[in-house]
Amino acid sequence: MTPQEYAYNLGKTANNIKRKLASISTEVKNNLLRRTAELLKERAEELKEANKKDLQLAEKKGYSKALLDRLALNEKRINGMIQVLNDVIALPDPVGEIISMWTRPNGLKVGQMRVPLGAILIIYEARPNVTIEAASLCIKSSNAVILKGGSETINSNRVLVDILKQSAREVGYPEDAILFVDSTDRQVVNELLKLNQFIDVVIPRGGEGLIRAVAENSTIPVIKHYKGVCNLYIDNEANMQMALDIAYNAKVERPSVCNAIENLIVHKDIAEEFLPEIAYYYGKAGVEMRCDEVSYEILKDNPKAINTEIVKATEEDFYEEFLDLIIAVKVVNSLDEAIDFIHKYGSNHSESIITENYEKGMRFINEVDSSAVYVNASTRFTDGNEFGLGAEMGISTDKIHARGPMGLKELTIPKFIVFGNGQIRNGVGVPKEGEEIEINKEACERK
Image (cartoon, rainbow, N blue to C red; front, side, top):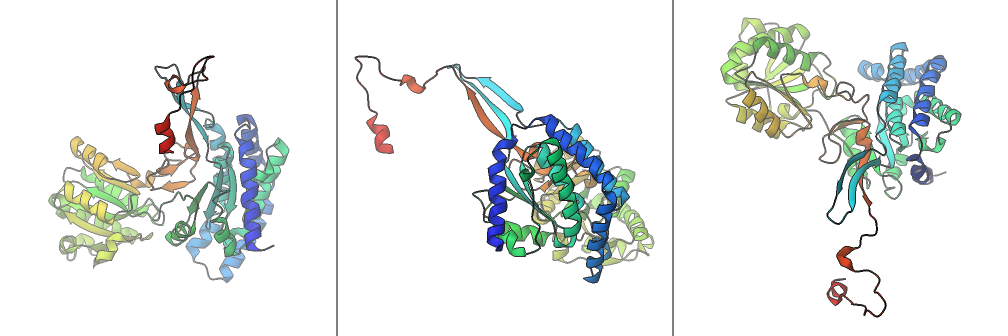
């Protein structure tokens, strides 16, 4: 079978099954997720063996320690997948929810109801636990899903998808709604991205290169974020200890993720007090600080920064998603300058202001155009679980129905529903006996 035929069959299968899913009960969907959690325990050793194969192949290819860590499935991560399933079970089923309803003067009742997106293609890298997280959300939201993991996790993902399909068979859920690209041929993905007649949405999860490649080659709508250049602004009316704690947490706690800060912006009035203090703690954590002219002059000979790597920033540094213990530093003269900086260099992901001034906090909330905006909190909270969504499909910085962490509701979309009792527009109905039929010539000409 050619890559084109293989992709076509997957897309057609997903399209054919999606209409049946909206009528499946919440009970059946939850039973599938519950059984999957049980099977993850029962088949844990099989899963670990498959994962060991992936790790061995990745080591031979010279993958970094960080990537090998993301690939690994240990007891803790298997338990994490089980917890995700239980969290999704506990979430209210959004399918069929009536969002609003109103009555028009003519008696028509007009409303909106949540319905599944349809068939979703998910393309992701490295972490095999995404298979369970993504599939569980698609199942609970009654979407057909095509799972395309990276070639580096092919063996682990095969077992995970087999567990999902076994669960589906046992509880009476259509197996064809859970599809897996069991091929490492990249041409298959290229072919899938052309199937806009079958697939409704593509969601890529991974590095910027993967996401850009998907967005540039897809004929299907893509929900995405390219990168996370997150910014933290320390206002001149900030609480110093709070600012230090948040600046440290947002960079150091887990620097390799998209919601860690890459730019630290500091008001000039507090810079000489704040920068040496944070430099001291950054130095202990091994953070390199790439500074603009003002911050460089403050820190270059400061005794508190003696153990911190202080270098001059380039223009490109402020655009960079380092995903590492590196941070770019900018001193600004005002809140307006800070917001302008964020709009220029940020990626519309997550931004935070530290301030004791309520009006400034609200201005920041209103004027910063990102998917998540904080006052006096770390950007590290931009995550579906942390926001109480149970799990997340990814983070969107697009201006569409889904923006920010995408949970269960974001895998549904409203449609209008209308209830009437015989209403007709402009009173034009079947003519009564003896009445002449009036033809709207103007309307016909417009057509």
